[in-house]
Length: 77
Image (cartoon, rainbow, N blue to C red; front, top):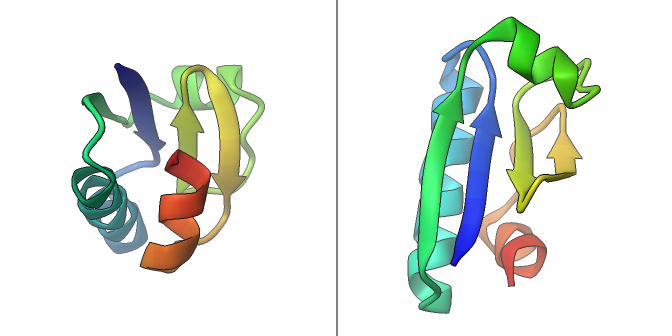
């Protein structure tokens, strides 16, 4: 099971990243746990300075933008 976290304060881009990630995960057919992390201390703990950010199994794979669905599938696949 993949653990996926969307880091950000809940802004529109953060919401969009969560939507794109969830759609990509469903298309890939993988089991996953998706968590939206809004606490700044946890976000900074990952070393992220620009949100939104995407974390997969504890590793930051993207920050500062919302990827296309295709790119998100590659990041999560």
